[in-house]
Amino acid sequence: MQQKQDSQGGKPSSILGKAHPALKAFMCGSLSGTCSTLLFQPLDLVKTRLQTLQNNMKPGAPKVGMMTVLVQVIRTESFLGLWKGVSPSFVRCIPGVGIYFSTFYSLKQHYFQEGRAPNAGEAVLLGAGARAVAGVCMLPVTVIKTRFESGRYNYVSVLGALKSVCETEGPRALFSGLTATLLRDAPFSGIYVMFYSQAKRSLPPEVSSSPYAPLGNFGCGVMAGVLASVVTQPADVVKTHIQVSPSHWTTKDAIRYIYTEHGLRGFFRGAVPRSLRRTLMAAMAWTVYEQLMARMGLKS
Image (cartoon, rainbow, N blue to C red; front, side):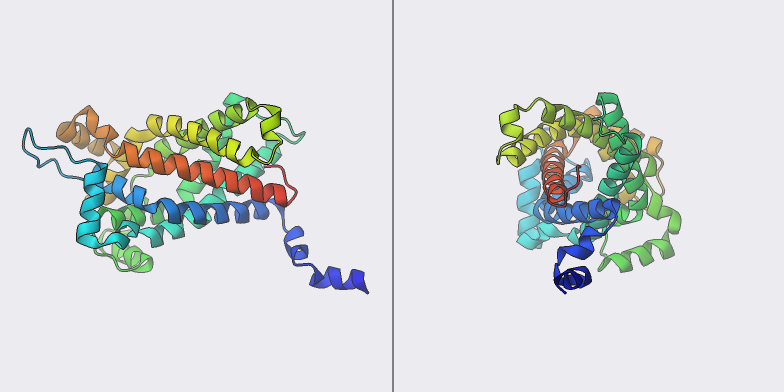
């Protein structure tokens, strides 16, 4: 009788336990993405504003930095204005991070069936492949998110923004910046996974097997995130300019504009808030994901 009760749902985890491992990875990734997106959204907004600033300052004028933009947003749009664009960020990141981790898990299980850990080169391909799939799937929402954060568009909702873009610019606009997005996301994830996995292996056994293992993993994630963010920063600036422009810029057009208006330094505009956000967000997402997977009895 007790056995029958358990099989019919007496235990809350019975249904989840029967789910496909890839679905479990999706659920763990989505939950980790929700936490990190809500916490670090202000940094993403500041980064976008910095990257889209017009070069109208006179020679010798004080430079506009991260704190200047932060204070300006709070003064003109209120403190909650720092979370402008959080709705499309949720729509993008919750399924997007889930797709990324489920793809990553599936690829790893398929190509490393005997439990062998991927080497550095394989880790790059594994991370880049999973991110490319997630990036293409979520690109339309990424475009809307970037426009929300730029402050140039008066969209009310995500669905309203999607409808407006399709009516005024055509569906093609929802896939603007595809090349720049892939050049940013795939290398970032590949480099991140490589450094993260190598750093975790270098942790002393007494750390990796202790209750402080999540903290150690978070530290490895921070280090990997900084390196990956710096390498992919130029592609992020190019992507932002393409997606906030209503004139269907190509990647070449955006690169030419940024270099003409801002010089080489323009490709690293917004690097500080982006590095902070991407580093902390990725480190938190991976740490939460791995802990949730371990609780489900799966090796991440």
